[in-house]
Structures are given as C-alpha cells and as structure tokens.
Image (spheres, rainbow over the protein chains, first blue to last red):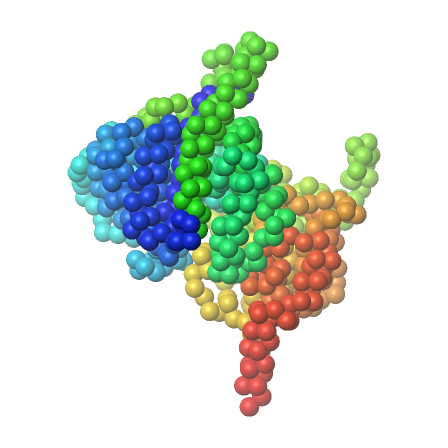
Length: 380
Length: 247
C-alpha cells in the first residue's frame, strides 16, 4: 500500500511536571508549554496541540488563549487542540476564538473535536452528562455550518437560534482543519464520515490494531455518503529516551500513580507491571528508544492506515528534562526515521509492483503532506 | 481446530445453538457479536434507533449479525445480551423478554450515565435492579467486568493455557449452565462468582472490574472481595439496611 507522507504532532494536556524534587506551579507550567511548542517547531514537528481539562494537575483549560500565546512565539508550526470538548463549548464562541487564532497565526489553526473522556466541564459549565450526545450532535452541526457557510441560520435545543448570522473575524473559506476525535464508539466514526471530517483515533490502551475495523468503517461510510477520503490520525501516549529501559522506567514512575488515581475514580484496579510491559510491547503506549517508537509508528501506518501520528508527551509528574528529551528525539530521530522507513518500503513496493504509481491507486488514503487539509470547501 | 474438519459436523450442530440477541451496537455489543458469530451462533443486534442506522456498523464491525429493532431482537432471540448504557435500562422492552434468559453485561459508568445514586448503591447490585425491572426473565450477569479490548483480544479455544476467564453470576441453575456454555463457546472460561446479589463483586469498584484474569485469578479475586475496601463498604451498607428493615 502506498503510504505517502506522514505528519507528526505533539500533544499536551498541560500536565504539571516536576523539576528535581520540585513540582512546577500552574503558572510555570503554562509558560513551559510555550517553550515546549517552540522546541517542537525547532525540531521540525508539524503540529502542536493542547487538550481541555478542568482539574488539578492540568493547565490546559483555556486552550485558545494558550495557543494565541504560542502563535506569537512561533512561525511555522501548526497549532491545534488534541481535543476540544465541543459539548460544553459554545460553537459561536469557539468559532470566534479559532478564527482569531487562525488570523493571528497566519493560517496555522486547527482543532480536534470530541466528546472527551473526562467530564469535569459538564458540571462546571452547568451541563448534564446525560445530554452529552445531543449536545455534541447539535453543536457539531452548528460549528460546521459556521465554518462552511457565509451566513448561518440555525435553531436547536442547546443554545439560542441564529438568523443570517455572520461572525468576525471570518475564517478562511471552508474553515480550519477540523478533526473528529473518537475513542472507539462506532457511532462517532460514522458521524465523522457524515461530516466528511478527518478521523483522529485516541488509542490509550490495548492493541491498536483493534481499531482497524473502525478505519474500514470510516472509509466505507465516507464512500456511502459520497465524500472523498479523509486522513486518519492516531493520538497516543508515550515517551522517547535514549534507551528502551530508560524510557520504560521513567514513564512507569509517572504513569503508574496516574492510572492508579484514574482507576480509583472510575472503579477499576491499576494495571500491573506485567500489563504495562505488554502495553509497551504490543499495546498502545509509545514508550522506548527512537528506533523502537519509529518501528511501532510504521506498524500503525500498516494496521490503521494513519497519515498523522500525535504523541502526547506529558503526563503528570514527569520530569521537565524527560519531556524535553522526548520532544527532541521525536523531532530529530523518530520523525525522520519513520519517513525513511516508509520511503524505503515505497521504493521496494514500486520496484516489485510497476502498477503502484498507477492513478487507479488513488483510493489509498489521502496523504497528509504539508498542505492544510481541504476541509469542507468541496462539499459544504 | 484443524481446517480439515468436515463442515457437516458444524452444520449438524447449528440447529441446537440458541439465537443470540444483543441490545446495544456500541463498543461492547459489536465485540460480543464478533465473538459469538465466530463461535457459530446466529446473532441479532439492535442499537437505540432504526436498524438502518447501524447497518453499516454491523456490516463492517460484525459482519454476519442481523441488524433489527430492539423489539424484534427481543422477540426473535433465545438469549438476549444487554450491552446498552446502564442508565438507559428502562428502554429495554421488558414485556418481550418474558420467560427469556437475559445476560446483563452493563455497568454503571458515570461519565456516560451521569451521576446516578440508584446505579451506585452498595446495597443493591445493578443486576438485581435489572432483574426487578425484568421480573419474568431469568437474569444472569456476564461479560461485564472485562474491558472490551481484552474481550476482543482474549478469546482462545478451550484448554489453552492461560485462557482468560469471565465471571458469571445468577441464581437459576439452568440459566447459569446456558451462560457458561455461551462464555465457553465465545473463547473464555466461565467462573461462577455467586448470585445476582453477590454480583456487586463484578461491578466498578471491585478488583474484578477491568480485570483480565485466568479462572484461578478470578476465583482468588472473588475470595478476596469481602476483605477489600469495597467489600467491607458493601457489607456495612447491607448490614445497616437489614437492621433498618428489621426495626
């Protein structure tokens, strides 16, 4: 299969790190994120994204503000969200924030919309969790109309109606690249396809190839809706260090207490070291030396047909230095190595299969390239 | 299993297999469909809306299963598996399940169901709640405690070393035997963990919830449950309840 090029994103949830014996303050962590985004740009990564959380240990609650700060400190790296909790955001406000960010960054804004696996924003902003499906569905409809239509008339149950509304600053025609983040719900996959939006698979546990069926479902659904192929991306957690052992140990020190805490909240017991080792070997964690992580990403391009890979490099309590090393190695070693491996394979495939460059092969996934994804403009 | 096994044997066995209905076409419902289709069962499945809404999902993620309405699934199946969000249990077509074996694979997950004290009561297992909602059905708890990705990756033929186990709970011997056979056919060792009242030991907050253990691991966890923090909480709440109802 022709894989084409691949894009690399760095994701942060604004997790508060440690520095020696000290835990950084929230404010220090906010400023660190700007430095880390600059670092990501310097080592050639394509996208820097932040999440949206409302709890102790995370400072990513005001995403667009943070991204605006980063926009003025960087020049070329694209800026997005690793998930925006659309259900508890106002689509009009979101449009205003991201059209401003896009203007400020000279066309570098993008975002991933999701229902989120953490739900603190619901009580915080006065929403009922039980309504999350309706909230997401209606707000996605409105947000996409705002991006794709010049003047919007909309009514629904989750906010005040709009009549012939135009928002300013206006976005570029068709809107900014907007992905749908999914965690395994088949209905969410269909929804992404229905809107013709690229799919971001959030895979944080278990063997990633389980999602191959979801990718098939996504492509078939796009076909059924008569829409062109869109890229598939993967959001994963991980750490890159000089050796596999160093990476595994460093990550475990921070990951184990975090997952223990999550388990306490959701009623499951923390994973054992044995389970952890399995997650590293064949599971969802991208923890290891540059070569190990690069090989694993290449496997994902086979199993899940991804053309974008996002690494969430920060988890609470990780040392600042380990984060910096991950960013450095991700950009300078892993990304080029993956591209090299993919190019080698493509060359080998071309040599053995003269039809590989045939125009009929155009049903392969749309390669990411360095262009912005043409969202919406062709099928608004 | 050798590939050369005569298909006639399989075909001859087919008529005796019950038809399985699955209510819920999400993560768990589609994984269970695949497991049971692979085991040779006829599988009928329903989402929350019309069959058309899930036909593509089923076509791709569980090819061979038949998408129907929830009422049709309830009516036409011998055994019905509940794989919808627990918070929506009142949408289950109770009257159509009368006399049937119903497998409760649901869990309270507050991030989907909202904060619901009725679904998080240490005095009452959620399967007891389902049994009281379906008084004329025989309810057995199964397939709830293992994560859906482990369910997906875990099936193995009977006798495989380290084959993973599924805890089952209920009070009806025949129903339990049927569910044990189903669990076994789907690739897991069935382990009886107690009655529906006991099945709180499979719910969120228990060691078994989210666990991917072998049969002996499940048995050990069941034995440990009363002395765990959650086990003690459950025992205290139930003792208090009995005291209240005695006065």
